Length: 368
Image (tube, rainbow, N blue to C red; front, side, top):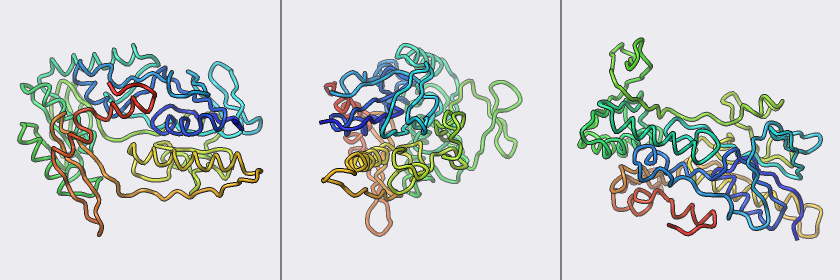
């Protein structure tokens, strides 16, 4: 028996996981502006290699057995009437609402438009630009910047590729200098120019870029892998700016509830529960929120469950592919240290398939 209406706003990794966990337990409605699930982990390669163009797109139609998926844009959460208001004017009643709108990533790791065709055209445009560029500049030496630089180099062995990073070592946000050194060694061994301590900004002339020392770099194509922006402007415009912190993230308590409201949750990249914004963390939050939502919906019954508290994740395995056949895996070990594993482990865990078979199975499709 299904008890209660749950509206999940956002069909990314956290939203899909949570909706699937509650399907059959509650009346679930998943709302997303896109018509398909976007497997962002595969997006960097899709922006470089034509044979990967459609790989990141997985239909939602097999995700839920009892619930439904609505293609639309949420513009407001009406906490008085307990309804989610869509841009079309449609109102979705809720007993529990979950904000899972994620974060906006720089291109090419971005779903542009709302349809598969629109996003695929953008990927194809990036592929054409990379195929004809003489010099590609990637700004940002975190996991995404390193991965993208490797993908571009392998696709264009004849082009000049530069990776500029504001920090003193690559992957410095991970806390593993050894991983950063290994990433730099791989890139430089494949003729990628690595510029450290090099904060870049667009120059005066088109196609020029300037670092903090005034050095000008010319490149006919650039990608900025310098962070993400929470997708929460709609909440501010809808009257819930008090739910957000100074960075635009949704403030949550340890049960992942928002603003002290028992019926409003936020999961994944959109919230402030942890600084570590990677897929395993989003999935863990979705699982905990699903438990707490079940507890909330059954709170008046005989089988009342106590809510669980979320513990912020600060150390978790992190995989950085260098194309499909190499990369590194950072594995936390006791004592605060991080083991850095090589290509074989990375290829098996992520680099070859970019976890596409796993996500296809999660959405009800075969692995291929």
